[in-house]
Image (cartoon, rainbow, N blue to C red; front, top):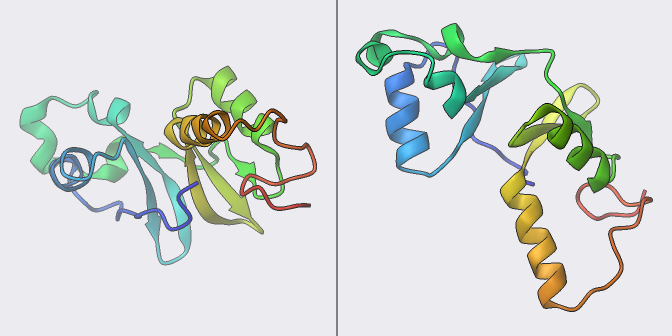
Amino acid sequence: MDKSPQCISPAASIESVVNESFMRQGLKALPVCNETGLLGIVTIADVKKVPQEEWDNTTVQAVMTRIPLDSVSEEDDLSAALKIMGEKGLNQIPVMSQGKMIGLLSRADIIRYLQTQQQLGIKNKPKPNTDISGRPV
């Protein structure tokens, strides 16, 4: 899980998100936030709905997926996140605690975790009584 995901302003242009975050940083999605907190999420799929020649004049707010978003709690185990992501076809999911976003969990994060587990020869799966960060609950 990315514990401090970059947030983007709803007023940012799609062009800036594509160039600065998707292309330069390799991100596939960004939380959209303002001073009050999480407003939604903007993904590559959202951006693809707008013709490229309109990216500079279209704000993130116009295309983002708005709250309420599918999310998981920091107390949820990894299987809860995988279930939601699989059922909804999501590539990332916000991790929430007391109504605030505390991280963004991606499929890539899960794959890295499982690969490391396999490389280390760890045969037991994440215990149901651990949270997404692997801490006991």
